[in-house]
Image 1 (cartoon, one colour):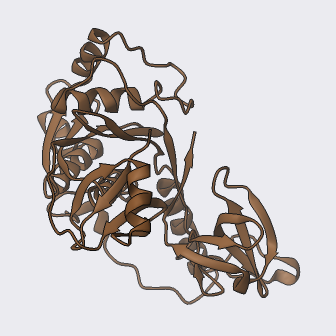
Image 2 (cartoon, helix red, strand yellow):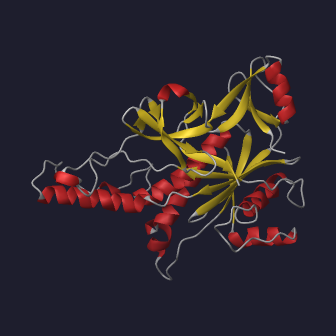
Image 3 (cartoon, helix red, strand yellow):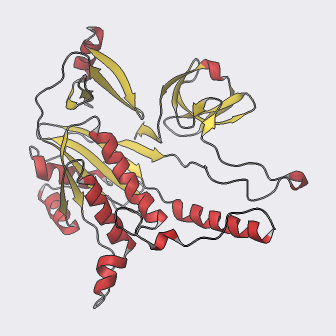
Length: 340
């Protein structure tokens, strides 16, 4: 059973409640229905405080998929299987090639400037754009969850970059993965207590409970990635010897096109069309809307005076001839949430 997140009248996260209890509070006027980037929760209208049990956030980092689990001693609240941000490196390279091409075409361009990526750019850490995007996405999800759940501790499976024997500088300062990890721990520590466990420790705890992890990393099953995040969270709060809740919510981030001036290839007549925008006829792209016919969906691009709407479950386009006045705005979102 998926429990409903609860926040107080002053937006302080409280213990989640049963869906039936949430409906009862809304009908009685003691709570309001709210959405936070696609996640439904209720906001109490009278209470400011409440009893809070220890709640842990388990994080299993990965190169392409990542697992997040929110758990207390009594029950597990939610599992999230998130797609990692993997396109930034290619986007930065494309932007660089376009800038160099404009210089050769005698097109107006900004003056050359020093490479800012080689200097400390994030609180003393030197992070390339792709590395920063990966770890910042984990931090964004953690902050988002901490707005609805009273997280007391985050337990992260510690990962290590390739080391070189006798190269202390490479192992501690040069590796982008190590720098990104340390920056993430520093920022996550501003939200709650941070604990780390090595991969072999997670493996041992998982084996003690008789749990096996799937080798198919593309699987959306609980046993692909969230089994490790649940094991880490359960290590801190305890309470279970086997998973009590295995339903997984899949989180897919949207890829925005903001700074590209025009398409790479010109259209007919040598005209280069404009490329990149986050607004579609008054709606921010990715926003959750309720259409009079299609129901719950999210906003994509637009053509003329009509919107393009997409399915929340699959991300496929439902059509591109929808009128803006037929869509009721629900919430902004930077990602797509769907149950596996």
